Image (cartoon, rainbow, N blue to C red):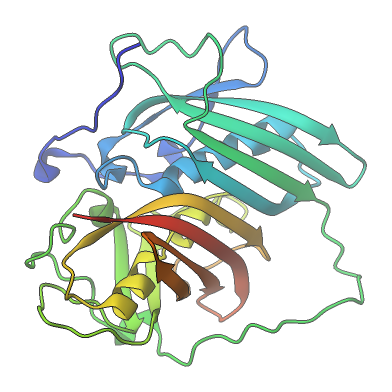
Length: 304
């Protein structure tokens, strides 16, 4: 197989993305648990954005488990190999189908654009394990230690600048979302910004809505705004060492509730960055300040 390379179509020539359509997996005839999808260049950073590939794998799990009575509880992703935009395959193994829960593992890998057959042995560019369970609203065991950040609504903050002296300012992925920094620091081309508090709060929405017919985000897509460690690390490190890439190694998510608003508030904190690695957490709140998901991310830091 030819190793797929990242695509390089000029950003102005790339059609707009639709996250629901672009992560919608299609079963492969004759191969049980096998799916195929084409991830368009709209979701490119250098390779396909990690949160988008994770969402794709989760959607394949939901399809394979096929249990409307179960909701996503958690997903843990290990990124073994960068996935270029283009054709990918997903293989799902359902580990358990219980009365009130199910577990499954998805393996996602990129296909050769010159021979994009989704058959053959599964590979593991990305591995995602998922737990699905039946919600129990009558359960008396409840607490919420997380507190929503004290910031305004998305209308109170400016959108991301379109053109600045920053290699990541105008990439295809950023054109698919509206992202507004509410608290923290992003440097937008500034130089000599010293290290600061390693946290950020930001409002996020897709330009094309991920809300399904039931009024909620399509399951799994919240993994996209859950991939958000970079702003907190950047705020904490400052600019004295130049721009850097955040290369996700692992992302773990806990799905707390359905998402019913177009905007999500991302509250991110980096707990550590050392020896070339960083880790941190994110709380995801909807526009009504309801906690909808939690994420923990570990990433490799690489100079750009």
